[in-house]
Amino acid sequence: MASETQSISGTLKRRGLMFVLSSPSGAGKTTISRKLLDADSAIRMSVSVTTRPIRPGEVDGKDYHFTDRATFDRKVENGEFLEWAEVFGNCYGTPVAQIAQGLEQGQDFLFDIDWQGTQQLSQRMRDDVVPVFLLPPSVEELRRRLTTRGTDSAEVIAGRMARAQSEISHWDGYDYVIVNDDVETCFAKVREILAAERMRRVRQNGLIGFVRELMKSDA
Amino acid sequence: MASETQSISGTLKRRGLMFVLSSPSGAGKTTISRKLLDADSAIRMSVSVTTRPIRPGEVDGKDYHFTDRATFDRKVENGEFLEWAEVFGNCYGTPVAQIAQGLEQGQDFLFDIDWQGTQQLSQRMRDDVVPVFLLPPSVEELRRRLTTRGTDSAEVIAGRMARAQSEISHWDGYDYVIVNDDVETCFAKVREILAAERMRRVRQNGLIGFVRELMKSDA
Image 1 (cartoon, each protein chain N blue to C red):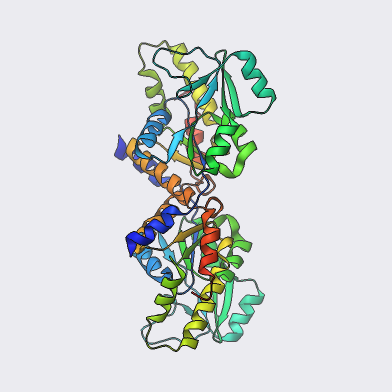
Image 2 (cartoon, rainbow over the protein chains, first blue to last red):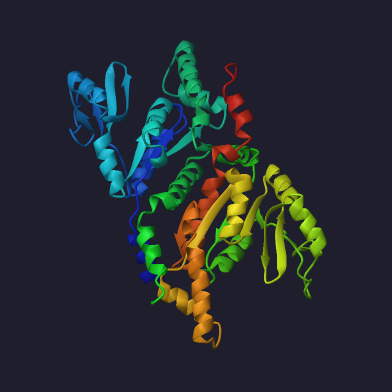
């Protein structure tokens, strides 16, 4: 019985979600993102549009959609981005069409973005966004992780610490917060949140028809 | 490092939650509740106040708080119950004081109640309530589970089906819905929801002080 009925709930239609991982540099966001994409085939990164030049080995349409500044600006004006940002003179944006269509088809998307991007996403599509913030286990550990990148000057490290703490100050805009004291534990928690959020009634479109069947009295 | 820092996040203060499991009779609510109480020492049933007579083997203050009808009615009038109901002439109520104090201390409570009780709980303490609804895998399976209780007449079974379907009709008042097609799978899902809800920022009081430490620049 189990295998038959598990396939029932497995085939119920579900709306996808936008899983956001934010953290200061040095809190493990990139590691956790990679592990999640490896382990979970139902979630993928959204492909951003960018004005930055293509790098060797990158594939247009896979790593990014590469475009020029004028086209990017026009897309911004037309509201074609769910969120966008300019970083070191290059622009990055998340195209609304791709996401809207994916969510409708039950595709989950992973976003590795900062608090401002998260805020923009939430303003447009609050019910679809699952915002998760990762914290470092201590200020000493944060400093250590930001230091072991080579022979950095005290000034450079202080700058990184200030940026990290600035990002941390927005922790209270997130639904879930995890202290990343151990990568495997943190990863397990991330997967629990994702699993639970997939079970939310508001995402489970397929239940409407399923319950209609349960309500039939002539079965 | 892991063990030291895991103990950090383990000791962070957290507000408890009220985990509600509802389902029609025959969808496995009782089995799942028992398994959860066995497996998870951080959650316990709330002890209800009841006017029903004590039965052999029951302990006052452990199984129920036994009381008389006049006292119960006075508690209702004084708003001392988070939810209450009359079933077959006996009254059952959840005392607000016990729950409020427990939540404050980080205690999670399990509620095995119907949609009306869930609605009452949510009206009073929405942010603390995690309402989960279990559905049977099919109407045929529901009928089978409601039938195998002995040699019941068609009329008795029809009555049970009608009550079950009436309860099912309120599935859309719940945050999470699980199709219980397999007990172990369903139980795993219940535990994922509970784990995720415990990670919600709004419950993690202890993070406020923790983040304050992270923001210190002189570390």
